Amino acid sequence: MTHPTTTILARYADGGHGLDDAALWSIEVHLDVCADCRARLAARTTPATAELLDRVAASLDRAIDAGPAPARHPAPAAAVHRRWLAWTLLPWLAVTVAVLGCGVLLDSVEPSLPSLVLLLAPVAPLPGVAVAWSQRIDPAWELIATTPAAGLAMVLRRTLAVLVVVLPALLVAGVSTGTSLALTLLPCLAFTAATLALGAFVGVWRAAIGLALAWSAAVLLPSVVTRSLSPVLQSGSTAVWAVATAALAAIIAPAATRFRRLTSGN
Amino acid sequence: MRAVRAAETAPTLHPWLVHAEKLRVRAGRHLAVDGLDLTLTAGVHGVLGPNGAGKTTLMRALSTVVKPAGGSLTLLGAPVDGRADLREVRRQLGYLPQQFGFYPRFTIREFVAYMAWLKEMPKAAVPDAVQRAIDRVGLTGKADARMKTLSGGMLRRAGIAQAVVNDPRLLLLDEPTVGLDPEQRLEFRDLLRDLAAESCVLVSTHLVEDVVAACTDVLLMNEGRLLFQGTPDDLIARGGQSDAGDSPAERGYSALLRRHRSTV
Image (cartoon, rainbow over all chains, first blue to last red):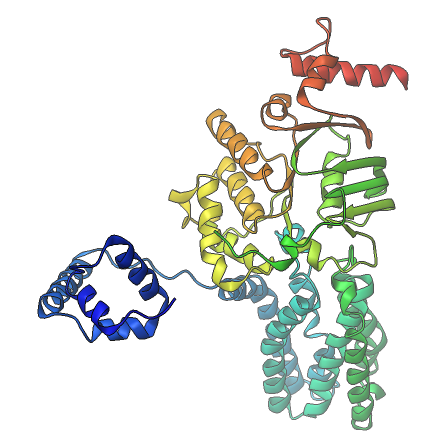
């Protein structure tokens, strides 16, 4: 539609005298969609209209002040999700941090033992990761499994939440006992990646338990019994851990669709 | 009012919303669904059957929770097997499991919003869709109550709300009327009729009268197989005066089961 002429707009602003109903309606329809003409109309308001608008604004302000407060804005779903995650993971992460704390204590009390912080670091994130994506722990798992969001992105988001707590805890433990930070953090990341990579095939929960048992049997217990640190945690193995972490992380990407398929075993 | 996605207005190239052929599904080691053939279109389909007939296992397979052990299953035109990416199907799915797990600390509104988010609804549409879903199940006054404070019937209705929040094309409700009082069941039937206009609703239940009152189609399952598929009137017509049951539909139900058992 063409824009109404200035005279017609002036007449419309003055109350629409001399315009028939059809003309009024077409002006209103046009004003609805044309910001320019609304601006032209606003510049043309009569003193009576301006006064009316002021009065309406003032009474609206009064009514808003007197009325009830606006409803609280509901928390976005992502925030709700974070809160749930925090509540579920909190006990497990607390235990993890407590065990690491005990490791630090033992290291200082019993220097003849190999560093427990080093030995525990790879398995430290596993309880949290297992809990974060588990049919047994998540009460709404069956519902979540039927949603399009179920998949690697969700697993990674939950894993990240675990690492955000575990990595700083390991960092503090490593610094306070003077162990190599690379040998504390890299195995931790490697085992997290291994859990997810293996979890794509057998389920994260089973993968975490399997890896924790394997580590305890192959490295942790022999090191404690023989009182000498296993060669896999000696300073020369840093490069191997770095390569392993990268390789395992690279496996996760092609396995991503497995988390979205039926019965990924979780 | 809601935004319509291009995928929804695209012409469908599949004749059935649900199509199963020789479907077999395991529950543990047991083959709970064994050689089921099923075709469903829009409407309300009531699944009846004795305990252990495989109703819940069928629902779990249709909701893409468990992988079929054999046969073929097509949902909304997409094959559902071990290799399929189910994202597109899952966006259009609503599911109320028999054991409805929830987060006790969440309010109903938060839980339904969380499910809407998981179903990848557009962010701007979520608050309105949540309010509408809660209104539809009659929990408006309880929307901000924590879920641990709810009664069994209210939880069931909250479960229905999360299932319908994304206006699913395929809605699976496993025992939705458990814990509802008679008045709420009447309201639930209205809701079912309302939903059936645009989507395929599958309701599993023990209550024959619910099926007759609200369903356009009755499925009778026994021992993992489909015994009967027809209208409620067909079911009623199968019953004779001598069959067990207090209503014509119940007599039809027991007549069908008895006839099947005597032939096996």
